[in-house]
Image 1 (cartoon, rainbow, N blue to C red):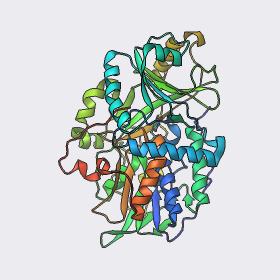
Image 2 (image 1 turned 90 degrees about the vertical axis):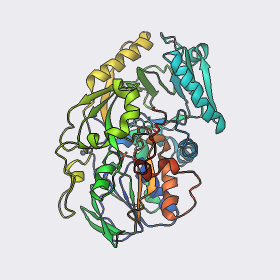
Image 3 (image 1 turned 135 degrees about the vertical axis):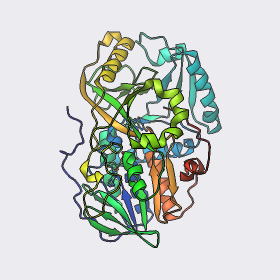
Image 4 (image 1 turned 180 degrees about the vertical axis):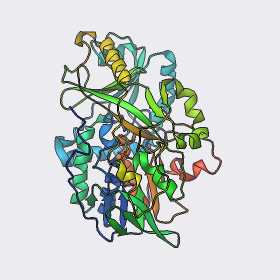
Length: 447
Ligand SMILES: Cc1cc2nc3c(=O)[nH]c(=O)nc-3n(C[C@H](O)[C@H](O)[C@H](O)COP(=O)(O)OP(=O)(O)OC[C@H]3O[C@@H](n4cnc5c(N)ncnc54)[C@H](O)[C@@H]3O)c2cc1C
């Protein structure tokens, strides 16, 4: 099975974009779509420009976990709101999102992991979350039939799952129903500014006048922002994923240990992925951002396969232009849908790990393998902020591998930030200036 969303996917929203609106959203992933949704609900005229296809990048390629568990304490209140929004969305769209409250389970491989779970329980208690620490026997009761004796676990029953390659393409219909104009194959090349302020954007389909722009470009955000003179140390890592053929249900939810992760899908298969492994392509941004990443690298370098260069056209490829003219095609049009090749050695190890845990089922047969470029930040939490240097520009990016679940909450927050309303959450952890004001980089929980 080829990956369900690609450049071959028919364009559902050909445009044209409006000539004038209140807010332009750059990027049609979960963050852009849900920001547009809530902005339109607040009565603003919104255009959403997507260079390729709605949810063609991370928002369709992820594991489908809607997870409060293990979140950075700064994100947790937004995530708890996001989970409630998901419940409402599931009511509006019925089964179409594949939303099910089946829980998220972390499995300890060693005693040290259990100590980490204990530390995180402090935040769960502080926020009244239903997370529980599990003994080895309780883990066994949740995962009958496994051949592995995990010494303990961490479980949040109210966590959920949804189907990535159908959820956001369905949610965009809700945004359109609320009045958003969505345009695919419509790269935004540059901001249009007058007196330093945003007065519009230049897209490949012409100029749109607006006084507010939300940059929700996922792995492309820092490339776009840098060309506008705004720098932040966002990088992208390659994460490989596989979907099994339908197989007996051994567990209805999502679970992960250090070796592998699995999540039941609506079609009766499992989505499998490595517990920690990923690949990293070295490029100019990696050098620029290196010092910011030292704290996370200390813990993470063993699970990273470093490669000397990204394939042509990737955001941090050596040959990718860093400056371009708004009158000519930009790097965004050159790569409509970022569709990296998965690391097949990693996928093979994941199949082995699943077979080791469930020997009675044999080595799982795969119906699809794919990869996504995760946009990450050195402290593993996003940037959600207005850009002081460019009035009218708001950035919502760097979801660091966990933006699918929180996306609807981020969308609500971004909408109120842009509309000038009270946001209701403390966003100081996500401020852009943390990378320039000498703040210490404090990584949040990694998964
Ligand atoms: C393998 C994998 C597993 C993951 N697992 C989970 C999980 O289980 N749970 C979870 O919560 N999160 C998970 N994530 C993370 C999650 O998928 C992302 O954090 C989230 O989808 C990010 O959404 P986004 O809207 O910010 O970016 P994206 O979905 O990447 O969307 C950004 C969009 O912007 C467009 N764009 C960029 N530049 C321009 C431009 N100049 N003009 C127009 N359009 C532009 C791109 O084409 C893209 O479609 C995972 C990610 C991956 C890759």
